[in-house]
Image 1 (cartoon, rainbow, N blue to C red):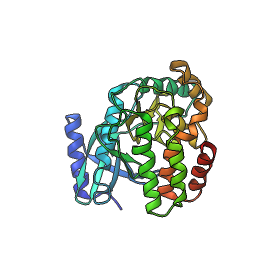
Image 2 (image 1 turned 90 degrees about the horizontal axis):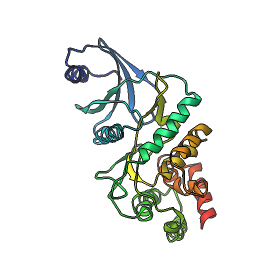
Image 3 (image 1 turned 60 degrees about the vertical axis):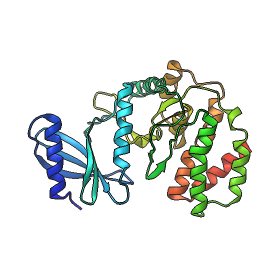
Image 4 (image 1 turned 120 degrees about the horizontal axis):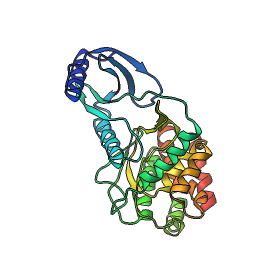
Length: 294
């Protein structure tokens, strides 16, 4: 469905205010690739811009939370993110208007910059694990109420909510909860104690770009302060990034001994997210991790 005339008018006004000059939207072309939102490339007399739209009834706070996450990452000044221009509603639609990123191929130098930049991002810390606000991971609500212990946060704000959702929708058997309980008793001794790190929160290969100048660009975050191995683990979940990324990260801030053995524990969270979104084979992956660690 094409963009409404009233939304086009509002976007033109927002762009004009942002740039301090009149902006006319000449064309709006759909962009594929997203599973939750509709995406558009806006051609204007001031150059291209990127737009995401969704239902205001289904996801009233989705884009406001995404804008907040992007702005937090941008303020850290470690890796580039698209500049947030505006977000809001128009009748039944909610929207997020962003800088358009021209892309190029990912080179060896790109991966090295990405690893070094992610380590710099993770150096940004806070006094608690969590965030002052909740947000989303994909289309699911992500609860970020702060806690002082990583193990407690991982259990009560990450694994338990997703496990409860999966049980309520009968995607997993009741017996899985008992295996998780056994794991919970061990978690605090499994992770090295580190300060909370500013995380992208959903760092798989679909959530970053290579800009035309070769710079890594983070998109679609699920930001919170957590254990830095969560981002590293997520990067490995669907095949992994290039080796130069991990080498550069470890050169900038070495991961603690045994980090490879903890990745599947970290990935219980995104795996449970995928169980709730898609079911299917992700249940078997969760069960395999539980068998290994309980």
